[in-house]
Length: 422
Image (cartoon, rainbow, N blue to C red; front, side):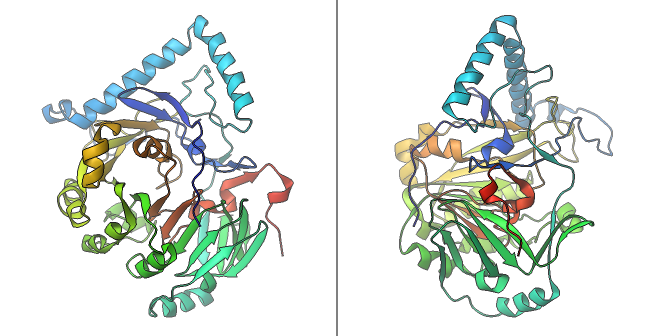
């Protein structure tokens, strides 16, 4: 069902050293040469916050502030070196070689007048939205009251598949073909603006080998376990909907204010003996301590380290004032592993590392695939819980696994993959 692939060079990494890495975030999720990801319009200047700018003693010594400043200093120094006359010709040569090696590379380093924190991509001015029709809302309300019946939907061939939302909800779908397929989902309306609506269905792309379960993770563990048939996974990545007042006000996605349900996720049954778990987390101390001291032990995992994702503008400035008490320009990635991994391979994971990138759409995280390959010394087969996109040979499990696979986010460069109209 899930096949391993040969490891390839990751062109989403623009710069990397022992302290930080500069990522082209849209390029990191590119999964098919014939499809080009349409990124959001990047921020050019930091976002202002309604607070006075001040730097207190605690902020001057805050380790996360110091880490962020150190990463920015290193990246800016590297940029200046690349701009020197001697490096310009070398960079151009590397670019040409990469084009030959990887004809559809969207993350080639180009040294321009502005800092190359993100290579040019197609951009979309408006965030797309999805709505469920009233008929399907009523249907899903009824279906949520019924225990899920384990069943697998397989896509064996390339082409276009059409399903109703009720056909896939709380079921395991896997694309077993060697091609990206189109999935027309009845009952979901998609619109980018009021004048651009798809009235009856939404169209999504499903990469080869990708699988997903669309449903409540608290109720569909048995669907996942039965579909895997005892097979174990190399890694699990989680991006839980942590309690957040801002998100709750905007209604961006469902938020569960009770964290105890996470302990009951079947991580111990899913993970290999030498497995790794990575959890995206807000900057709330209470939640961080919950992960380290409660959640990881409940899954029989050991805490290893915390990475930081620093969000910057196209000009290389932090997205928010780095000393702000209201909102920080970073999120944290809490990394844990099994005792066996900790004993045998602890040195593979760098301590206190910093990921730097221009952020994309709201809640869209950088891909961890290039780092997981290094940590596990293979092209891992993994599970993303609460994910909103699909990846080759990975399973995505949650309420919105197809969200970022909507064709509103992709441009087809091959006439054969354009969405078909019915």
